Length: 606
Ligand code: ARG
Image (tube, rainbow, N blue to C red; front, side, top):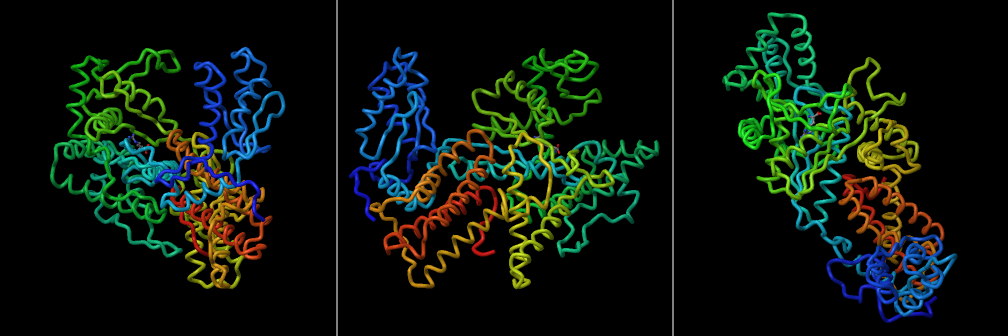
């Protein structure tokens, strides 16, 4: 049936530009304009407090919030605003409820026109609001010759999602994989390898799932070397001489170090490839890269009077950073023996990123336990005059727990290998896909199980509030029910299958029709699609991928409610069917784009 009411206007003046402003921001502007007409400037400039609502499309509580300051009764003020808003042609109704709420319902035409505009844009009308930004993202950053652990998994997945979202919004993003490839431990490791040439350390193994074993053999050697270092005084001395040899550029030693770094980095790369994260060898910017800068950085800090000597070491103190005993905790810049450590290196990273890479925003996606370290680094950067209004942030995250609620460890107390975790998820995914589709071919099963298991692990990570700890629970992650990656991927395949069926039966035309009235579920889905762009803005601002993850779950749910209530292929008329197919298509595009920004694929079938 055709809607009686067909306003000529639409929210965006029907001008199909690159960027499509969201209906929410259009409503905000309209309420602001009503406020400007009814109130003195200092009150009219406030946030109009527009939210989505269960009673109408949008609700504004502004009258309640400022009536007192305006010397009016909330109900009277709301009434004034209402009479202004009633003149806006793309609003169907503006109602007063309770003590002074404004309930705003948009014209169906305006909503459909909004979808038309979004559907015509390759990027769904998302504004590239980050175009003027240069953002360095320090993430993943595992340590060479050690196993990559679940903490690094969190950094890798959160960092990758932020890289994708910021890049999609037009920022120039520079990925920095700050691998731990330097330090005295390498002297020990190299000495051990030289003394035990028979203990080869290259990867040749293939695990039971047919994946080349991505665990780095150097990890085992590292543990053996550590044991010998602690037990054997003479070995310890030889190892220490090896550190000196490495630092002074001794060829044989440096070659061995290079080999180890390469081997480890290749093992990390296998994990990145398997996870489908963007990091590659060009993003490697490990600790060793900063060695040539350290003297100069420290010299600058000395010249500026920021570092001081303490017990022969160079440190920076902060009056309000105190240890448990009330003493000031220093940032160690140079050790007594003249060596540089983690602190000096990070001073170099921040100067380099702000001054050489010209970052307007420098992000460090690192475990929350390093909060104090980054607090210190940022403060020194400010004192040194490197930080002059750019945004630097420690994008912190919590700990991954086991099902026992304690930090995630293997039964023997060791680090859980990432590859094993992914294999676990893969096995579980195979099981549940087989349950759902017993006749699936082996090749399809492998394909789907791989996509589903990676998507599941990623979604579980990215749907969690980043600062919280969370329990790694493969069964929950790889489930078709609840807010899981598998559920979202599955909803995408359902939409795709509706579209395929439409084409097969010769009714594939998808076209929005602004003359049709919207069912409540259609309306809810449409308004949610329109929120995609605003959601990405929020992620860019808060650096919280869970907001996008939660949004996508809401979108999938809204689609499923729409599909239950509103027949698509069996719609009453050709117009309604075509319009609903267009809605299906736009939902699928939005879902796929959102999943892609979380680093996840949206399969056609599963
Ligand atoms: N490699 C470090 C670790 O495993 C993380 C490095 C983070 N980045 C940085 N610029 N400090 O804990």
